[in-house]
Image (cartoon, rainbow over all chains, first blue to last red):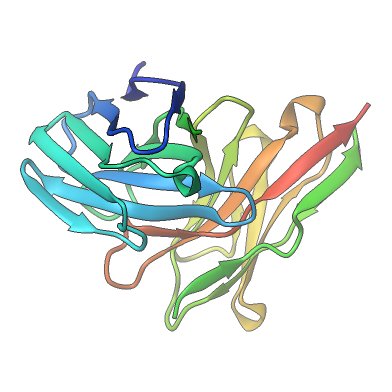
Length: 115
Length: 114
């Protein structure tokens, strides 16, 4: 019953490192999203992708980039990790059509700590 | 701008007691509204959603929510809480420009007393 998986549950990195967070979905969805979750702020959209090699900035893209080389895989990249990027990162895969009939699935999250 | 407000950061209830989690939204038209639950170490799971029609929506795990346009609210309720309901709950509204992009509230953490 696997739908959205994330490569790591926990990561610890040092300031300045390049960090890759991987997300894979097995539903053949075109859309994939990256959110970050912080206490008191809920989930905020970082980047999203409508299709392979297509990406768009969300609400808080600064300090992040993404890669979508294959339909099932969406990577979030921290070019030079900073301590303020310590957070929980959630990948999601919503349906292309309206959410009135289809469910948006979330991955279990990656808790990233930047020291 | 669209927004979602969950005024309660934490709520503690006794097992078996009733529960109501508050959610208020800001939206210019009929909103698409959602409640998600996040159990410790888990991703988000959809509890229920509202798009139109009956303003009382039934969800999974015995939860329900009522859409009140006049109050811009979509409060989540459960008549009898179980210890396994301890989790964080998020209210969300779909964006006007794209219905599958969601704006989330800040979340309410539910603690259940034995």
